[in-house]
Length: 415
Image (cartoon, rainbow, N blue to C red; front, side, top):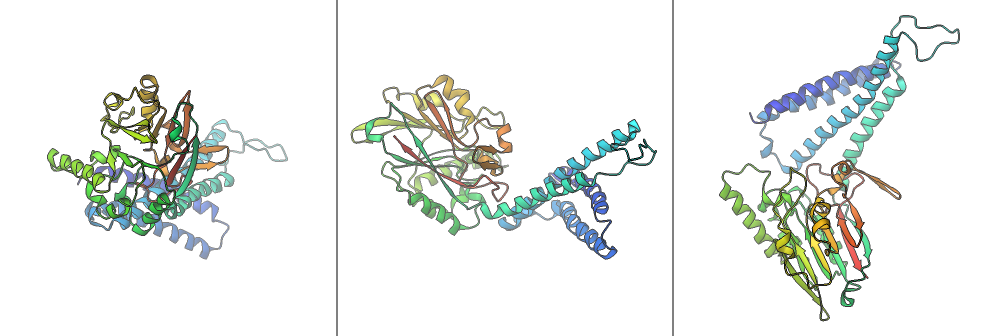
């Protein structure tokens, strides 16, 4: 069956990790009573065995037919368990390498008070590193489970931007920026409605959406058109496409079906009253003054993501406008094409990264694994007179949660 070979590889890796981790569990529980130790062993293998059994049966269970919420949470738990054990194993391996080196050199790490050297006996495993490994793995798994509760915990982030070349009529304008709705992942409509109400509560002059309305299929929006069509603003609601909107990650019956899906998705934008910008620009006017709003299709400098966008088409004719805002889904577009070729674009708005839905953001420090792939991955970036803002995403995909990097509604005020 499709992907069964990959699943068996994962199964073997998990089994080996389970056996390895179990040796440490036995060591750390040796001071407990026999009854407690037996309980720990049974609990460990019930939990680990259930995960292994699920992997064995997965090719035969047709998970695509399962309820979406069951499938999503179950897979996320398996992935979380897998990475938690990897983290723990790293610590155990460090300890085993330490022990191997000590054994090979014939020296003890610590000599006893009598000054004895290596006795030829085996070198004990470090209890400290063993506990540290279990704590690190357990913390990761626990945080991923806790993160399930954060996926609709919308955060309003406020940003004030100042530009010398912004026309006076647009000073004080309030813009709401959202991105990466991923409606195919939603399972709680009322929670999503609260996010939309938060947007409406800002009474923005302009609302901009920078792509990934769905995970793959236009039909994923069927239950949410009546939620997002409530969004409105005096200067309008504008949108662009993201990499997921094209259906590139689905095996379609034929090319025509894929094309119809994209066409339907474009129609959904219209049904919600959103103006979808496809490599084009519009003129925004306020009190007789004008600025340009550009929107392009997905354009990425990363090889695995498509370059459908045509910046030259969107930019043509905007030279006469003193201020330009660009909507482009992938932030890698900024350094790769916008900065070197279009220095008159004042503000670019992006999404795409989600901040990987996992990381740490505290005053003075922030980190996410996604930063090793994207230099600009969340928040505001500046270079000369140009600015880029990367929204952390309204929705979620893959992992049904958020740890540290919460869903975002960006409110930008101009001066």
